[in-house]
Image (cartoon, rainbow, N blue to C red; front, side):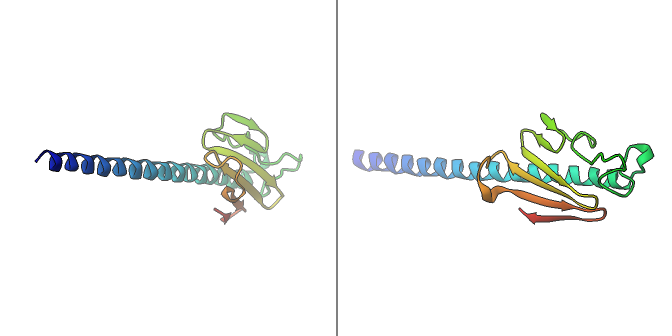
Length: 139
């Protein structure tokens, strides 16, 4: 009877160990996906604010139907109050990731990199913002 009980205890410990490993892997995947979702949300927040800048008259501090106003000032993270720890015009960084803008008069391209993939090339999220559309180039 002692050997059978010992065998059941060892088997139970193996099952619990496997369950813990699977749980840790699932948590890691969920955390990574949550980070990507947060970056996509940040990009959408910026995109809607950039569209508001585009449509707002220049007299009120907007672009007057352009992402670049007549003074040459372009939409950037400081003009739309983007929530970031570090902002430098067309570059911003927060806990979710890093963001870079490329601005023309009719389009803004946002390149975002989640903090869970700081240097991997395939983790770049890119969106193009126009006056009436936000399209995901890569995600």
